Amino acid sequence: MNSQAVRDYLLGLQQRVVSALEAADGNAFLSDGWSREPGGRLEGDGLSRLIEGGSVFERGGVNFSHVKGRVLPPSATQHRPELAGAPFEAMGVSLVLHPHNPFVPTVHMNVRMFAALPANAPAVTWFGGGMDLTPYYGYERDAQHFHRVCRDALQPHGEALYPRFKAWCDDYFFLKHRNEPRGIGGIFFDDFAEGGFDKGFALIQSVGDAFLAAYLPIVERRQGYAYGERERDFQAYRRGRYVEFNLVWDRGTLFGLQSGGRTESILMSMPPQVTWRYDWAPEPGTPEARLYSDFLRPRDWADETSTPLWL
Image: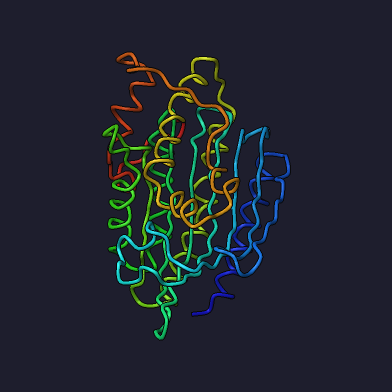
C-alpha cells in the first residue's frame, strides 16, 4: 500500500478541480486547512475549499481529508464485519456543487481509499467513489453526456464495470422513504478491492480525472438560461430531497459523523436555501412534472440516441 501516492494524487485532483471551477465562476474558492493532534480519537489533516455566493455556484465545496482512527465506525464495516474494531486510515476528495441557476444541475463526486489495519495482520485496502447528477429541470442531452463520460472513464478497466457501477448508483442514490431516485445517477462503487491496490488506485484516478469533462460542458450549456421565482422555488423544494438523502442514507456522511470527523467539512454538501412542502406534487404536463416522469427513473442514458444539439 502506497498511501503517499494516493495522497499526492488526491491533493493534485482537488487543486485541478478548484482551478477549473474558479475559472468557470470568476470567483475564488476559500481555503480552510485543518489538522487533528496525534493521540485523539481521530488524527490527521485536511483542506476544505469552499465557495458561497459565486456568480455560478451558490454554494460548493471540494474537500480533501486524510485521517487515522482507532476503530472503524459501523458505517465502514457493514460489509466487512471481520474488520470491526480495527484501526483505520482513510483519505479522499469529495465535492458537491449547488449552482444558482435551476437549469444547471447539482453534482456530486467522490474518490476515496480506506485501509483497515488489524493487529498482527496485513493491511486490508479498498477503494470507493463515483459521481452523480441531480437536475431540477431535465435535458436528455445533458444526461447522455454525463453518462457517456462516466462510461468512457471506466472503459480501460473492463467492459463490465460501467453497467455494474451504473446500476449500483441507481440503487444507492435512492430515497427509500420516498420511493424516489435522488437524480439521474451516474456511477458508484464501494468496498472495491478487486485486483489489489494498483487496480483500485488506477480506478479512482480514472473517475477523478473524468469529472470536469462530465460536468463543465453542462454548466456552460445551461448557465445562460433565464429563470424566475417559479424555477427557483422548485429548485429549493427538490434540494430538500438532497438534504434528506445525505442525512438519512449517505454512508460518507454517516462515516464522518460516527468517526468524529470535522462537522463543518462533512456538512458542506448541504444546499444554502431549501424548502419543504406538505404532500406537494407538480401539475401534470409541466416541466416540473416531466422531471419525475421522464428523468427520476433508471434509463440507459449512455446508449440512448442523441437528441438535437439545441436541447
